[in-house]
Length: 149
Image (cartoon, rainbow, N blue to C red; front, side):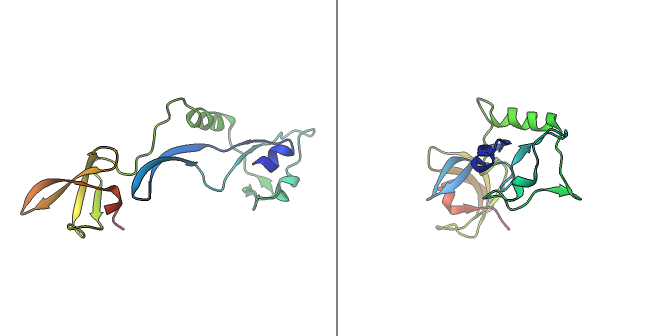
C-alpha cells in the first residue's frame, strides 16, 4: 500500500477486528477484511492517473479486471466500508458464538461434542456437554476446542 501511496495513488484497506487463538489464549487482532485485496482510487477521466504503473509496483500481484479494464466499485460501497472499518467501537468477530457446535480436541473429554455458551473469565470458556444423558456445564481453555470439519 505504501508503494502505491508514494506514487500518488489513494488507497484503502478495510480492517476487521476478530478473535484468534494465540498460544492457547483468545486475543483480539485486526486483519484485512479482504486479504490480499486493496482498493485504489482512479480517475476515469482523460486527465486522470494511469493505472498501468500499478501493475509493476512492488507488492502488487495483479489487478482485478473485467476484460482489459480494472474492476470498478461504487463510491458508496467504499464509503460504507470505510465508515464501518473506522467506527470508534467496531464490532469484533467472535471466535465462537453462543450455540456453536464444537469438538473438544484435548483433555479428559477429547472427542466429545460441546455447545459453546459464553466466555468464562479471561482465559476460559463455558460449554455444554452431554454426560450420562444429561447436559453438563464445563469450563475449558479455548485451545481445547475446535470447530468440526
